[in-house]
Image (cartoon, rainbow, N blue to C red; front, side, top):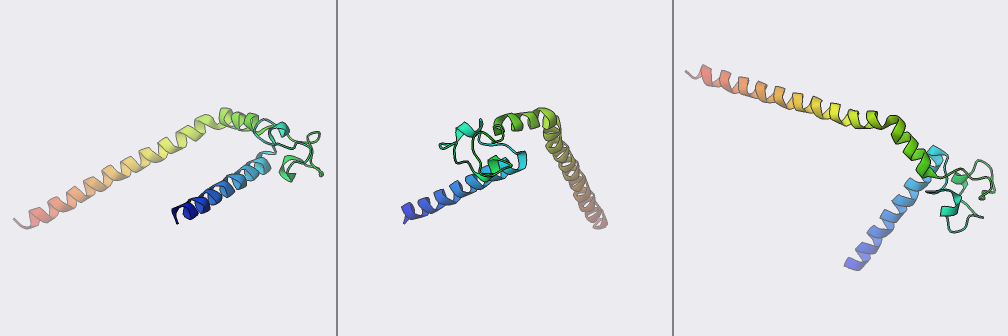
Length: 113
């Protein structure tokens, strides 16, 4: 039964990887990791690799590595700063909630005297 579950999970994982690859190729207008030659059969490429069909190595987009590297070079600082700002906001919210809880506890304690 474990082997069956493992095969099922492996299939789901590989299906998600294929879907993500297709989505990246469609969104960035790129083909494969390094170009159309990264596919085993560059004569018959997926439709996401080209603007025109039939899709082959001649009319294929360039590889996705360069496009994604360019994206991180352009927006890398923003991609890094946004999570830090969110974390700082959450830290301020935690400190504020702790102060509020302490104030409420002190107020309850003072009313008992």
